[in-house]
Length: 261
Image (tube, rainbow, N blue to C red; front, side):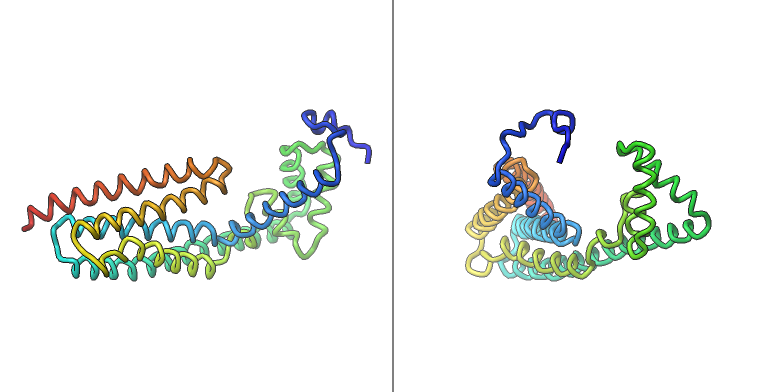
């Protein structure tokens, strides 16, 4: 290959290339591809939202009810009701959301297919303009556009991706999103509720807050690693969000619980 690496990658030294470095680069790309597929499928987003919402929602609810000086039985019942209702609500919301994305993307692809049958030159010209905006010269963009539309099986999907950044295959799976959200919300919601099955009062409040804080640190750390910012940044941000939300809710429960009583 005769690429001009000084122009294409000015910060890279070709002399540093080796089989080990190439293997590491390939493995990095494989890892990115795996993560991208999970993101596209909707599983990661739904799972993170589910466990995070479960943690925050049920910690706030249990602390709010506990702040109103109610019995441990009331806290348990409220927490279980919140767990079930929240999990079902999250699952239904994720399914409808992702399914709507898929249907919108499929509609765009159908409309693009119709535009092609109305006037192929217009679609080709639009594709070429889009590729030129991404840095291709006019001749290369024209050839690439012809190559896209000549792939009969994937032409509409590929053209929709290039023109509008939309692809029905990348919109995600409604089922995966719903199930991930349902299960992870239940797990997250049960963590702050668990201590109330073995103790009550201030001890249960302390354990609820502690367990939720630990779980939040793990969730935040995982997100921090995935985003490239490092585990501590994500963990600290997540812990701060949970701490502020739970403190406000406990205060509201304490104030209004006393007022109601």
